[in-house]
Length: 80
Image (cartoon, rainbow, N blue to C red; front, side, top):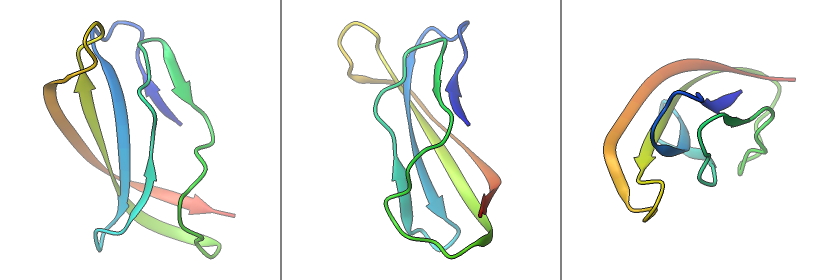
């Protein structure tokens, strides 16, 4: 689940990469209070467990210009 909490003042988008830097997902801009439950990956991955890095980019809600910087977190992706 990739979400943008309702209390967030910025729109956000996510980029998800494997540890080797391969991009496997790029989201559309997500408004506060919304999310993406089952993102469709841009690369086929065999079933298994993968270490990923999810990077969130903030955007100004009015102009949609990048604002507020980025935040990255390491996580685990399970492909069934």
